[in-house]
Amino acid sequence: MNPFAKRLRRPRGRIAGIALLSACVLSGARPAPAQELKVQESTLANGMKLLLLPRKDEPTIACGWVARVGSVNERPGITGISHLFEHMMFKGTPTIGTKDAAKDLEIIAEQEKVRAEMRAEITAMRARQRRGEIDDITKPENKTARYKELEARFDALVKAQRDLLVKNEFDRIYTAQGGSGMNAFTTYDMTGYFVTVPKNKLELWMWMESDRLKDPVFREFYAERDVVYEERRLRVESTPTGKLEEAFDSLFWHSTPYTWPVIGYPSDVASITKQEADDYYALYYAPNNLTAILVGDFDPKEAALLAERYLGRIPRGKNPPPEVVTAPPKWSSEVRTSGEAETNPEIEVRWHTVPFQHPDSYALEILAGVLNGRTGRLEKALVLPATAAATKIRASAGGLMSPQKYAGAFAVDAEAKDGHSLEEVEKGIDAELEKLKKDLVPAEELQKVKNNVAAASFRRLSSNFFILLQLIVYEGYGDWREMNEAPKKAAAVTAEDVRRVASRYFTKENRAVYLVSRKGGATPEDPEIAALPEQARPMIKQTLARVAASNDPEQLKKMVEQIEARAGQMPPEMKKGMDLVVARARARIDELSKGTK
Image (cartoon, rainbow, N blue to C red):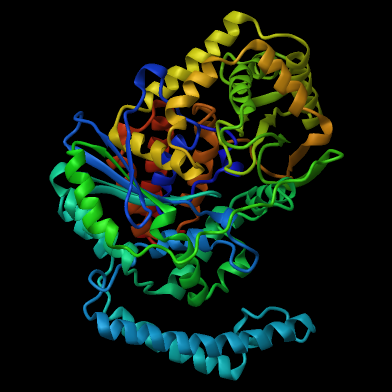
């Protein structure tokens, strides 16, 4: 898994455990050359692409689809809307999720009228806040009398709608028919949805997914918006370094759409309107911007006919999604940011590199392998010696191992030991990178890295589910064929290629540096986390922080169920970490059941 995924990728699943599984795929897993996937590609009449990969290994079908839309397609004012849709797409249709579809739609329409009046009052309150007449528009005492009246009316409508709702019916239908693992994730560049069903339930999946794509009903829109707002609080604001990491991301990606977080800014998330959501959906969730993917035990001819019958009935979008054209400018000097947190002293050095499929991305991936891992150069130089300055070191090539669709990054991330400064660690990192600029990597060392890349890729072909996730990710970036082509390109990387990209990208004027020192009284890293494989630590730390901050035992139980359901398909490097998450989640459930927080 990409060690700096916590900042550059941050997959946004509805359940933390599944988000972690998605992150394993986003790490750049690629099949070995001998395992080229024979995917059948076609396009329906409405523009939706269809990818079919028959496999008889399991009597199941991993089914999914990807919308080529993520936070990079947003704008200030609606940041976080792509992630919000990840939630809203599970709310149902006129057929699913309600006891009375007609009455439900009437209530939604009335809710919108009330919300429009509420927004007018909020505009007036914001103006008062800018003038200094009130300090915070969210405080009850600062709300206008008219707003409080409208708020009471809206709450009554919400209660009336809840009496009609059939909660979680989408999930319950799949589960009753033998389905499992229904979930989704959102990244900067895409939103993916997936579920595994028995091989005789393919038509059910076709109907269910086409129904929610053709006629979605965004029930509880404003309530779910508040859920996303709370998720942001748990993921960002309740973690020791969440806000600092977000600020560094914004600094590094400045002047590009990658500058805002996938989960959105708090003020935007709290202000997105249903009309804005409807317009966004019509543009980016049209079939001509989607790809449906099947991996498993099915007849491809039958699947194609079902796809045309069900998915093909969704109307094509009226307008194609606009192209993302804003690219990061060339920097002329290094940028540095620093802060304090209740954590171990930490440094990240990050360089602008290249986007998905750029020729230099393959050499950068191999270079990352030279630096990274237990036998990598950074580990040997900064961690293993008795005089080591770093407690652990992590390196990764963002251009390949964690690629962006429109840009890329390479990062080295380390924590300093007690008694050593971050300046020492930074000098050690620079020294190792300078060696790569000057000297060719020996042939044996280079081949070892290539072998490791191929082996890791092969392991991730163990199940329909993980192959599906990889196809979703690569197709989301723009080309599923990269799964087959990348191994050949990585295998062709030479020692001179590695030296060339090191010299080209690892320059001072091309980098940003993030420094975090420990606040007084902060404790060293949890020993159970420190014992995990280094590539698993960042995501496990984030998930454990969310577990500790959660006050919802049902949500925690759901997390445990999702993790345990996928235990057999989990990469070895994640298994021990997820066992720790399950243990901590159960302990937190026990605390909450006893009334202690």
